[in-house]
Length: 172
Image (cartoon, rainbow, N blue to C red; front, side, top):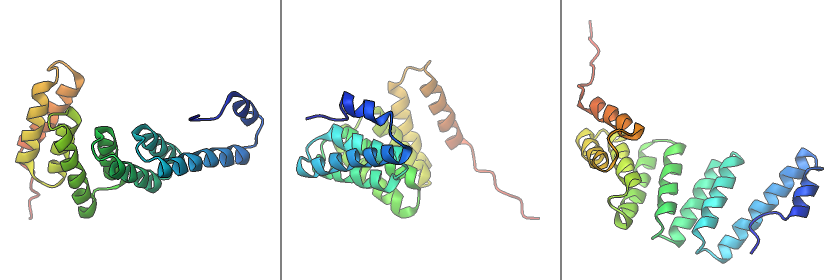
């Protein structure tokens, strides 16, 4: 099945007004959504739909698309990671953190030693104030990273921050 506009449609788009282009894009996104509702076992399609919504500035619809995709294909790690990331970009309220933890648990069942899973495990623990759990997850991640990589160095800095005692304000 075609996944985007053909050459003629692209040529026509060049002569369209901004409103006409936006209408064409909205139609393509809607058709993709409708196809996914009929054929929900297309992980790449769900990821493309979420990306399209994010590009259009519709983060809530992107979140819904990823949630629908993750529900349709719960064993797909990329969908779980995409959903987890989208949740955390939406905010870090207690409800969002709890939802993220549930998605993380699903991802851990799929690939417990995946670097992104380990990163998010530490990140969620840090956001929840569980510094020892964050440190443990990130040290496991550090063990599989190239010690000379920028990611390993940035992670070491984050682990160090967890070791530092919190600065308390003096009340005078």
